Length: 358
Image (cartoon, rainbow, N blue to C red; front, side, top):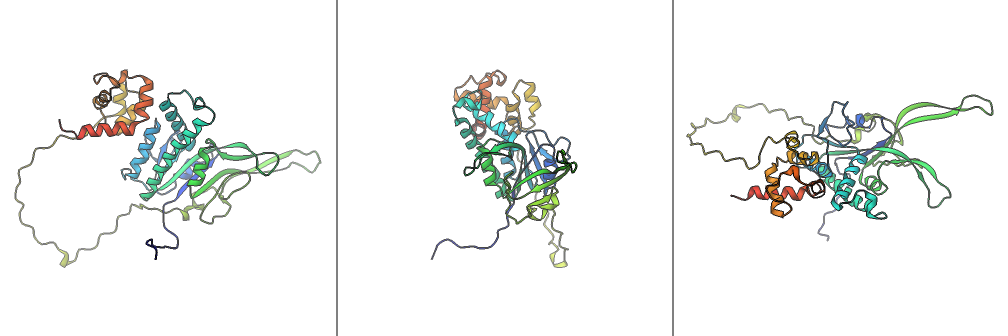
């Protein structure tokens, strides 16, 4: 007999959705209708929408840190929306290049840079899995582009819609998601008259949502949806659970037998002196930038309440620069390639210093 239990049937779980389509079709508006969404807006596309959003990430490390905040339960929401994957990939590529101290992804040599970026982008998907494990839905938006495609068993190529990410990242997203949805305008081309040389005329332009694979686009779903739907959230609403509805249970009426017994008068206890806070508070990114701290680093420091003095101490301990050297004087490549790119490790050392009594 196996030591592992065998289960069967469907398992209720949050849904991971990837939605891509041409610019301006309404991807962000569509995602805003998911249950209690919070956006991480990497491109500024939600400025005209009344939605909840985290600060726009200025670095790859900040993006990963914001996703981690959701998985820790520090962000009240039911759905996390990444808007968009192709702009997030730019942050990923910048981080890979800064870490290797190269100017562009092509400087690594043939194909190597994109392989490194693919491995780094996988960290985002791992972080999103942690968000899913805490009961949140995840939506990843992406732009669409027309590319040439050639079937391995056919002669010639043809145009098809694909996600506007690199060829290495797009398959990761397709494999990862439960629903890959393609939004587009449905256009009908017909002849303008009955003459043999009549010109073609396009009509229609209705927005539709495709849920199944087609030679001209990628799509999939695991819910048995029709191949074509109106581009409205109601078309897929039944597939999306609301894991955190936020409605508190109604209080049970207090019965006579539930009445609490009278409590004795409390004995006054002298108040203990308040301990100084272990973590500084009230640090803003604008204040740090006013001191000359670069924007990407200032955002990370403010999000984690890190003071310039704490950062200077860690830099001095590692022997990079003197501990009394101001952060504003650090070289730009050191800030981007060492501090920002390796922020989780830097923050861990800062927290360790906070725990050490002096």
